[in-house]
Length: 247
Image (cartoon, rainbow, N blue to C red; front, side, top):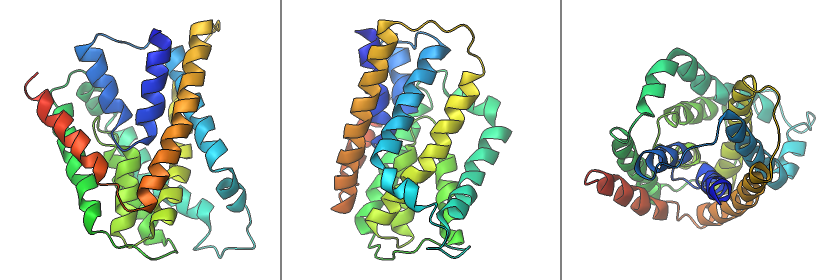
């Protein structure tokens, strides 16, 4: 049951704009629910990665159609550029960010900030289809803030895209193409610590729970983004952040 619960939490909060890392900190500190080791974390990251690949399969295939795009519009170039800011921030501030995960003291502030980020999309009127190098850099900077527990990666990147004037479907797709690199990087870094892994039914149950709930979360989020209602999630993280001040 513990593995299923953690798999569901990871799958849903990884993609919905409510911050999986923030929820992990809350569950670990308030309910004493902890990951059963680094191996299980890697399994959940792989499950969510597979969920993104399954859902965005056509978009992934399309980015390798080099004849379709110029160099400046090539999705692989834009993804690489958009990945740089978060990579630099993670490399330079690793120890600081690790300390932020130790308690809910800072997470509650970040949940509130996340709420205001999402709330700003109420005034976004994006209609532009093309994503420029400048857009990729700014969206990448937004993604770097999601290293903070309580700031959603999908929420920050999609919001940045919408505020830059990019239409919802394009902002959504680019956000999740960026997530493939981010999730893969996290899984690879943790996988280095694996040795002699023995699979169990609990691990597989958590993996499947994360995969299925991740796919469901992506589908729900896309529908919400397309109808320009991303700000609905703001009320949840604002409320959660405020409640944590009284706990």
